[in-house]
Length: 319
Ligand SMILES: [Fe+2]
Ligand SMILES: [Fe+2]
Image (cartoon, rainbow, N blue to C red; front, side, top):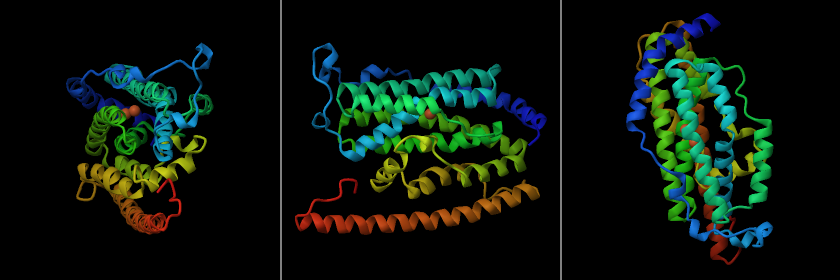
């Protein structure tokens, strides 16, 4: 899309952004990270005369640790995401107010999760800090997305994050962590609704360009953490545990948003939009098949692991 068209679209969407910003501010409830952290469990580390972290202090499973670290490091790269949206949406008017507000809300997520993990000694704080330094130093760059592509991408990404936090809470086996992650998930859901509503308006203003952006963002979707050290290993564990996998990605992230936009029943597309929709439909069929295969393989793997543990062998920890 030429720059002039992209800017024009941003301007046309401004009243919708203003309306949804008001809606968001009306619905968002104030909450404080400190309320979600069990401070009474905290104690000094060696530098202050206490004891440094060691693995037996953690009550989290290997899977819960992998998910917590992945989710926290993803939240930590906020300066990159701020840059991503500030350069696309600008700093003026309702777009600019949203960029600031969203950034401030997101920062709470990293604060709450880090405080929880350090106080409860859930993960190695040295390893966590080194990973944060590493990941933030390389930063996140989504490439040359247009503003429309960026707003489309984050619609899916916010919902993906919501699902991931929510299911991570469940595998921690800790009601304190579960409550904290449920609270964070609520924020992610409101963020998703905001972006989703902007794209819905864009589908009316510029149906073909928006449909093209939707197809491209679904087909090329990648979580922002993909460049993080250990991401492959951790995301495998996360998928095996059903925290975030292809089935959830298709059923609980991509499809509900596409349905909300009425993508497959719309009649206002020209040739470009029709073609993009066809490509999307073909891709989704493939994704659904892949998801079914993954779930099948996982079930077989779990059954084998259960049989092994019945016979007294050590079960695979990630399954
Ligand atoms: Fe977040
Ligand atoms: Fe969010």
